[in-house]
Image (cartoon, rainbow, N blue to C red; front, side, top):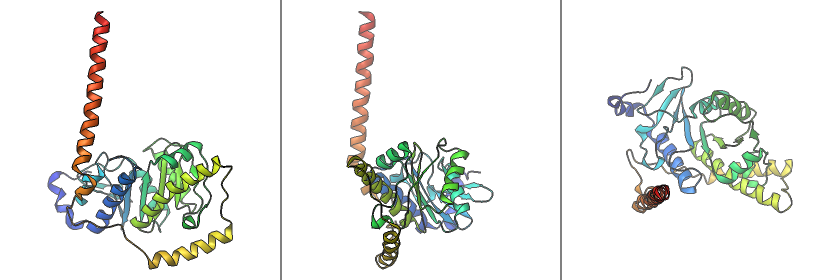
Length: 274
């Protein structure tokens, strides 16, 4: 059951604001990278026996920690002022089958979505992606459906750290929000390489020995140079991600579209009466 507005601030005491702010910043990174618009895609993190996830139809750039939604992994009871992302079942399914997964990032970036439409598997192409492993495309299932949740959880359960959703987008998992985000960003870069290599004659993946060596090297390297997703102070909106010129630009484009629509209606009326 969704909590009412009066319960919103009361829930603050039970909320890990550090984790919440990491989720929000990850969403904003996805917007800044052009992988999602303001509201598509979703980000979550495990919170004990629950998951904490972005709400549906809420712009990442305007979210606060109290806007995120808790979902019990056993009862599926929901706590929050907003409805959870429509893909919450997919996130819950992954957490149930992979105890090591602590965070999930789902996006609709162009290159990875293109590979998902081709329904191909991307092999390990570069050293930095050794910890991700091969990136298969899971079978098609409708967005936000129980079928998609089943397909994704079954594929992730095989040990994959990132997969493509047929004709949809990409999902990456990690032991932290920072790791899931890094992998989600890497999936898009690898997808672009894969497509470009195919145009040039074909991609040549790394062999098993190279993958093992790279995985070991980056395990130590990333531990020594680990950088968390920047956290926000409680209630901070980080206006640099939603600048005035963003709003003006949006309003300008909307105005152009409205004028164009109005012009079409006027011309249609004139044509009808001619």
